[in-house]
Image 1 (cartoon, helix red, strand yellow):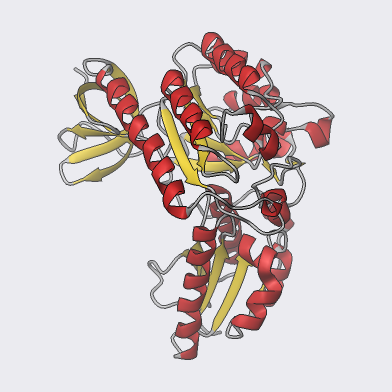
Image 2 (image 1 turned 120 degrees about the vertical axis):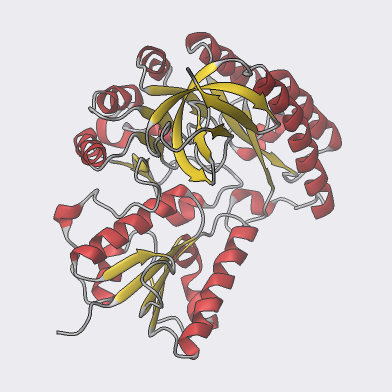
Length: 434
């Protein structure tokens, strides 16, 4: 027998794509391939799979550039085969086939069995939920559903991911137990719309029940909820968050805007009044919660006055975490029929104003933590400094805590109590608590 074929999976885009790549690699490993994330420890691969993103213009460009890079590698003989999968492939397969003939095969977001067959591998149903983690072994992204039934005017995700398909609580609990046995301490719950979990399977929103089920899994220290759509948010989930110590007092709630006219155009199913009431209710029911949101700058027709309204509202809300997207005009979305009339430079300016304001808010929130003792999950070590996160921080997008400590004091992948000694706009300094 020859050596196992070496396959590298290159992942672009969001954490949901990363989970898909982890599943691909889990299947390939089970089929005897030497499969790894990206171009890492295996050296030059025989086969490269590019898992693409097609969300907004910048993400599409990044995906195309990466495909072209590996197409050139194939032409020069450095790799034997090139496979493209994921959201960009789902959305633009015909155009990509025509423009990049070096690619051996294209697959969409729901074609894992076909992708495996193209590589001479079998799709092993008994591996459902098993995957090769790309994250540090102590935390894992945890996809609770696929697709989305929302009709937001600016969003192309339903075009690429389809309608809502929730995973059963039984399957999710089994996967959580398996991850805990592997040493995972934190589950980062993700979906296109986690608020809607269970509607398709159980006829009602079952997010609260899912949180209880996962909270009962032995070994899981933190459960963190992302991508919660504000309209229809199940308030019974708040009681679970408040009561269960291993459910982080953290909620990712993408709001996008606050002006009523723009919310209606965006088809968000809510108003400023209802949004304000939801935020007040969340903060009342879960004291000390960290709220993360994302906003859109430069949506079609957004006036300077409407931008100022958003800016003033964000200042009053004092979100603990906030990100901003510049609007991207995506074909086949409802907003594509509108004039993309906010110039690119003005979109950038408006996004910058929101982020600059948030920087000041974040600086004050962090300064108030100096002197407190907080639990952190230690992610890595950089020289003589350990880097971790508090309950208020999700990986990649939020703050970090830099802890000066002898190597024997802290352990990567474990929780530790630290005393906050200093702060900046987005990070904290600390030392081990006595």
